[in-house]
Image 1 (cartoon, rainbow, N blue to C red):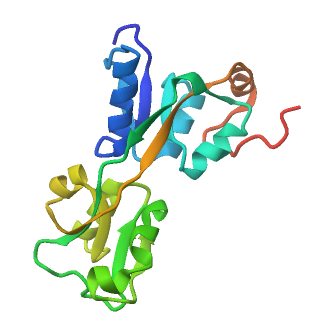
Image 2 (cartoon, rainbow, N blue to C red):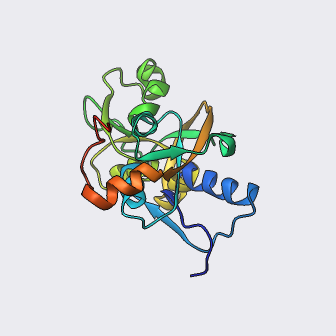
Length: 205
């Protein structure tokens, strides 16, 4: 690879991957060294092990709040940007097997669950809809194709990749995205003691 900034986020079939592309184009950064991870936690670990230089994180993810108060990480607030999140879909297998279980299982990132939890009977005809938590929209779609769930809240790329049938379009929101780097303090602490998978330091003094 060249000398460009090494970027990473959750992807590739995610809105985070689209946000990473926006970040790169806005700063005229080359997309020559990009790594996609199954979850944001792995992007965090890649920062700490210096496999990437910048991770793109959404404001609404619990990990973003954790990292904001962790001295090992630095948020580039000046480069933060808003991006409308593409529509999400309530989807099922094309064989029409949704709701085969009672209660039906719906795979979803927990943050998206309110999109259907208050109107499950309207959306699916099944008032006893239960959440199967997954880390990403692609994982939600995969849970349906693997028959671990009857329904998924997922995005269009995952809908197409896993050949699901959309039941309805769900409302979408605007997300704020933050570029996150390893701070100078984080680099020093990481060199001394970090092991991937350890929690945030509770006392940096």
